Length: 344
Image (cartoon, rainbow, N blue to C red; front, side, top):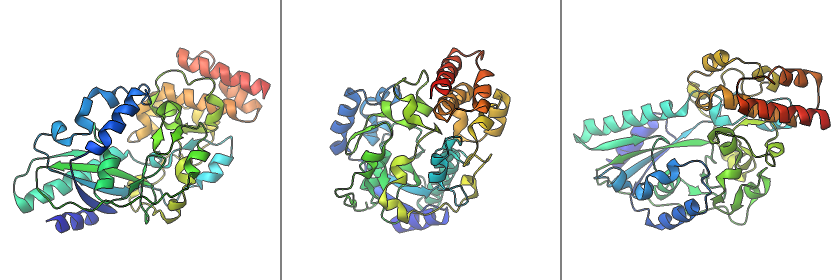
């Protein structure tokens, strides 16, 4: 049955499928320490469910095994991310968010896989997760042999690097488990050194409050003043720790049209995106993971990036047009950006 599940997974487009038990006791103390240090910032949901995150059978009673799956997402026909980062007038969007919302793509395939299992074995109790519940997905994927946790805290695989999504099926089937893979980071700490905000405070430890992905996606309020210049032109997420990782030389591009670039977001100009109205934002980003931050935070993020760009009349005019925006959050970041434009 385990081999059948892996074969069905491949047929559904997953790069790999692995199986683990639900014993995450080795990770529980580290999770609690991370929460106690406040590294989760405003992500209250990280602490809201207590130990359910590290005890799968408490989240879904009856769970005996977790089926983990990897799905490659790097878009094959996209502008080189290094070129975008080097162009201060361009908007950098994390590569995972250039196409369709991964939650839907991944969940549909996992649900299909779980239903296929049911057709073969009969009724079984399961739940599918795609970054949608208190699940330690990296720990579970590592236990299931899909890779190892890198020093940037993401899962790494020797043949696929880290440009992939993870999803899980919690099941009550007593399937045989796979063997975890040893880590292969060695003495390398390229991800730690390259982080623009030094958010990786130690190997395998991320202070989310300093992470650009947190600041541009999860943080609802004002971006701290001392961190704004460090964001550069990154308006949604950050890939620096992945771009520098030697293992991503072996990464595979996605074969799914869902993850193809939409709206030219792989190399769009900041000024071009900043003029989008709320209606433009909602219409063009329908079905995109970016839409969940809303137009207000979209403008906040782009304003910071415009403040970090070289002074230009076009940028100053675009910012000036937003000075009286209804949102205090937007007005604050626009004023900061204009001040930077006039003093850089």
